[in-house]
Amino acid sequence: MTGTMGTDVVPLAVEGLRKKYRRGVVLDGISFALRPGEAVALLGSNGAGKSTLLGCVTGDRLPDAGQVRLCGHDPFKDPASAAGCIGFVPEQPFLYGELTVSEFLQFVAAARRMDASAARQESARLLDLLGLAGAEGTLCRELSQGMGRKTAITAALLHRPQALLLDEALNGLDRTSAEHLVAELDARRGAGAAVLISSHDLDFVGGWCGRGLLLGPGGRWTMLEGAEWEAWRRAPGLAFTE
Amino acid sequence: MADPFRHPRPGAWIGVGLPALLGIAALWLGADSVRADPRDGDGAFGLGLVVSAAVAFWTYPILFRPADDALLRRLGIPARASYWLRAMRLAALALLVVALVLVPHVAAGTVGGTVLAVAGAAAATAWGAALFALAGGARDAVSSEWRPGFWSRRIAFDREMRNAGPLVFAPLVPVVDGIVAARLTVAEPLPAWGVAAAAAIVAALLAAAGARRFERAAPRFSPQAAEMAYAPAPEAGQAGLVSGRGLARLLPARAGAVRARDAAVVARRFRWAGRVAWPVAVVCVLAILRAGERPAVQGWVAGAGAVVLAMQAAAVIGLGRMEREGRRWLDRAAGLAAADRLLGRWAAAFGMALALVVPVGLTWALVLGAGAWMWIGAAGASALVASAASLAAAGR
Image (tube, rainbow over the protein chains, first blue to last red):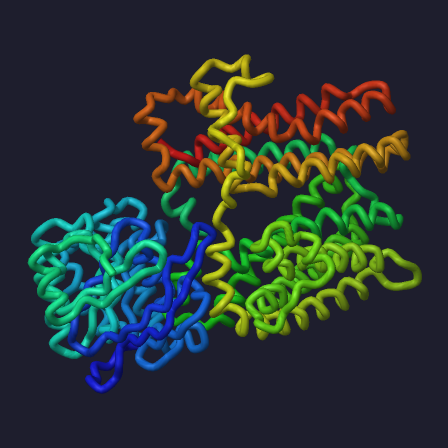
């Protein structure tokens, strides 16, 4: 299943999202939407709920209330359609340790019903871009953390999704690979994809993203855009002020 | 499944192969004690119980907790496809359980049509009933219309446990159904193979019905299942690990620290391994007191004890597999030697088994005049094998 790059489809829309754990409220009524072609930073200190939000959006965590729409599809009612819309790189990506890198990517392509030949070409291009050329025959369990993350990124980009959700995806990448990845994401944005990226590199997201969703303790949140975002970029931080 | 042969690793082979080999050897050597004669009602009951309980126990992790569940959902793999793949895994496990229960019969030369029919009927029925019941439990757990019933309200001391009520009690269904199927197989004048074939057909129908339930439940239950796997918070008032108390005082300091850590992790991450011991111990003690002089009862009690020790061994080996994911770095950084880890883990595993072997062993000795040390020895040996396999599974 490959994504199409129509610019009239909202890649991601979240309405009234709520999530509570035993330790307290983590997400409290979050509402926002990603516009085609934009990059939004997901900001917050450790434990603020960034991974929880991404999990609720991708269908990995069940929200207590609220709605999520991925290209118009509910990931909890129509997961197959929603799956074609997103490419998600979790903070700790799951790889089949018993498969090689190329076998893993072949499986991902087959599961998404991509054309085998096109998938092979795209895999080779992305692996080369991220500095993994030559590692196709390496078992996933023998990959370093950075190489495993690059494999997961390749798998997420393979089907050209409209919404890219990256949870600390740049962590552990060498500088060259990170630059190549950012260039690839820019190309995808130019074709209409939207990116939601969580990162502790505040200078990078401040320079690259157009606005930021800041999460605070107790479920507080605010969307920084326009003048607020420009002010934040001049003095990036994670302190939450009302 | 081909990975151990494509890319053989000593740790993986030892971690799985050693306990399997020793378990089969124990079943072979103890054939006369653990073999249940299915030609009579009690034997069929016991055989059905062992087979169906094992299948029921493993259904939830196979159906809802495979490691690649989130990845497959994100790839758009249909829920029904995942369901049938996992149903096949459960069927393979059921066949493995049947093969294991046949080992003592092979050793004693009593393998025949009746044994195969009873074990097969129990396995097939438990398989289909487990898929149907647990898929239904998952559907109810995420349904806004579900309300806790009588039994679910009895576990309302924990909100999350209460909300998972449909799943807490669902495994009882395949256990009971498997026992009934096993018992019917030897009931006159029903033909054994006819009952087994009917059980297989009913099981297939239940599995198909379970597929529809799973398809409805999966999008909302699967993410919830991942959160339900979190270990509950320690009870209020617990302050730190308990180290150097009781028999643990005999351990060297480092091994004692390992024991305290492993005991805490197993108690929280594999809570069922500890909790299964005392109800089985109660039943075994009552059985020995009531009819301990009968060889059939002795066989059941020994079999039940072996099952509990095997389950606890599985939890200890699971602990080692968790460490393979990267937690071993702390042991290396702290300078813990392999001997410390082995001794500490053995002590934690042995301690977990004491809840079973002490009361049952003492009762056994009181009623039968001997054999208490057999139970202590079995627990110690099982803990040793499990600990060694656990360390092998953890890797370097």
